[in-house]
Image (cartoon, rainbow, N blue to C red; front, side, top):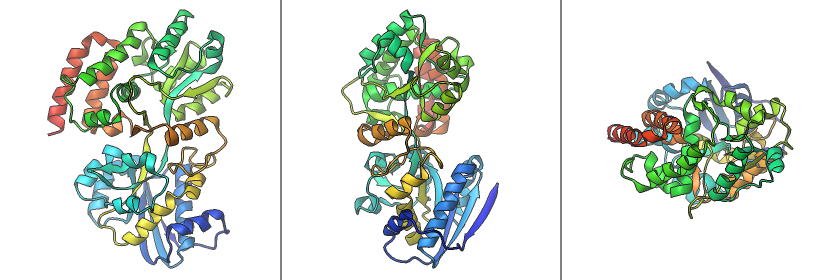
Length: 420
């Protein structure tokens, strides 16, 4: 699907959004600004069209051409789009997903914008836009992961939110003793197992170790930290903490065991809250906590980030940079991530969030207590082929933990082949 919108706009109602957004570009811009976006679903599409309209109103001498492409199709089209007659601004993803386009010289280095104060409030997510010590884009939305749990069941069993892994295990034992499972999970499509590995590894070894592993710099069979992560994971597996036959369920199917009360918690992204509510759970029955501390390392978090980038071949880099500054301003961030629009988290720490308890908790956690760094999730941080091999191994470990040596050997063989 492709559509083009030429930005010759009727006058928009004056708003604080425009007034403050105007500060993102102190002088008038002119010429053509070409933006290609994969925000093709209805709500994101309305957001990007609104952003273009607002930015166009701020700069009436600027002609903006917006091209919207299907989100899945863009994954295969982006390289060609950046290579031949590239637009000025494109959508993509953070962290290692930027790697191929950074290595190919297709994304513009915008480190100076971070260094000179053009992008305040992005410190917590700056690392996710950093490769080779430089920054290559800006974030515009993300969402938290964490442990969503049945607060009513915790209250019935006299449990409190755990701050440490020891407390997590103690809680789990009491849950098991009550006849319930500790965790719902569906690993049929593999990626949910990746979430458990992400958190256990970041809590055991720290964010930097996790990113070294994602970059192929550590040996899966020889690294002591990797083995310690799997040892911690096995404590839960051997307890019987997870629901039975999870390899047969999608994440949505497994969620039924939490909503029915047969399991008490789910390590998942905030997107699971809506299905919980739709299944009849009230906010008095659901709560959320940050994955607990294991070792004395700073807390890293999974928070997949969507991004804007300036193409290195852009023809109007001044306007492109001004647009990036505009979309990351606190006012714009607050507006586009509101519950009536994207319904996710603003990336600017100075933004405000909607009146939703989980959005508020996630924003506070990621802005103030993700000091280790922001990871993008296993299948984004690792190269696609390594992520596929890795997640197959992680699911197998959850079902057959005695297979660990074979699993690690396969993952190491894949590392040596893929990262050449």
